[in-house]
Amino acid sequence: MSTCEEPRAPNGPSPIATASGQSEYGFAEKVVEGISVSVNSIIIRIGAKAFNASFELSQLRIYSVNANWEHADLRFTRIQEAQRGEVLTFKEINWQMIRIEADAIQSSKHEIMSAPVRLITNQSKIRVTLKRRLKDCNVVASKLVLILDDLLWVLTDSQLKAMVQYAKSLSEAIEKSTEQRKSLASETAQSSAPAPSSQQVKAHQTTAAPDQNDAIVKLFNDFDVKETSHHLVISHLDLHICDDIHSKEKDSNRRVTGGAMQLSFSYLTVDYYPFHKAG
Image 1 (tube, rainbow, N blue to C red):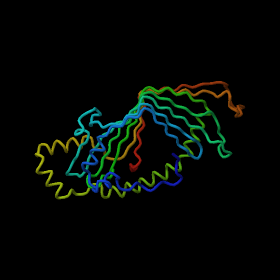
Image 2 (image 1 turned 90 degrees about the vertical axis):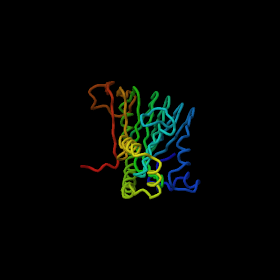
Image 3 (image 1 turned 60 degrees about the vertical axis):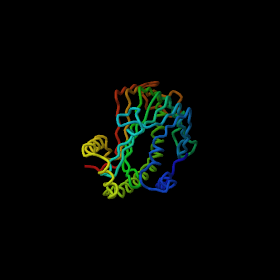
Image 4 (image 1 turned 180 degrees about the vertical axis):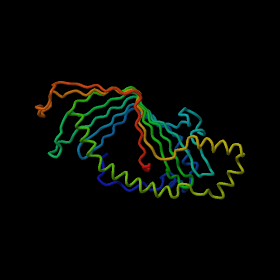
């Protein structure tokens, strides 16, 4: 894989809907949602302007869960609200180990060169909630939570500077992608709550009792995804930053040689709402 300087055009209609000949949320979508995936080992390589990165995951598993993130009957892994014309689905992705490595590309444009930046974590998981429209299966909003256990990370000062360079090299592409998603989100928001069709309302009214309707509406509201968001949760993080004794940089301004710093964080959370309006 490689990063793009210009954002790609958004994906077209769902291939599942195209193959089945229907655009509405139906049997084919439910079948695909119920599929579980298990991979012993997977390696992903990414090329960017300033660096190359690789992600190695072992014992990767993807499966459906209920709203409480528990294994359950597939019928309870979705909450369908016919009156609003939307459905919530819940997925969990976990792995035993992930190894991330980023290495700078040798170029005259990149001044900071250092040893590759590496990060190895133990068992972790991602929880994904998707809210889609029933009439066309388009995603209205999503919530992604990355949960990491205790994490120990040792970095030299040169590696820390290299990470800043890596982030800068990606910032322009990320900003362009964010602007594209915001423009698409505004268009989606205008039609995100369409009135349900008469067939949907009629079928819903004839097959569900009033008490059951109220229970479904309450359950949907309890777990509803109001807007797209991304979250990082780390139980405990120990970050060690130490002086790189092999660095070729001039150390005339350094008062201490071979210094080190330790930062400890307990239950660190980072929340990002890409489409949230200020104020």
